[in-house]
Amino acid sequence: MYEHFFQCPYCWEEVSVLLDPSVRKQTYIEDCETCCNPIEFHVEFESNELQMFEAQPIEQ
Image (tube, rainbow, N blue to C red; front, side, top):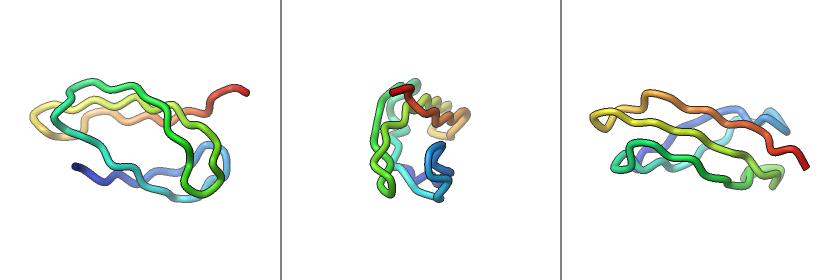
């Protein structure tokens, strides 16, 4: 697993997520560990290296 730190698009706190480099392209939703709002993640790995990471708010 790969720990990645980013800024929450809702509360602007620095939080982390665990990413699985064995899955090349990923899209999933996870709640912020600080404010509990849902975040949509788009992640891409190539040769076990993180190539792209996006964390976007979900319109509620």
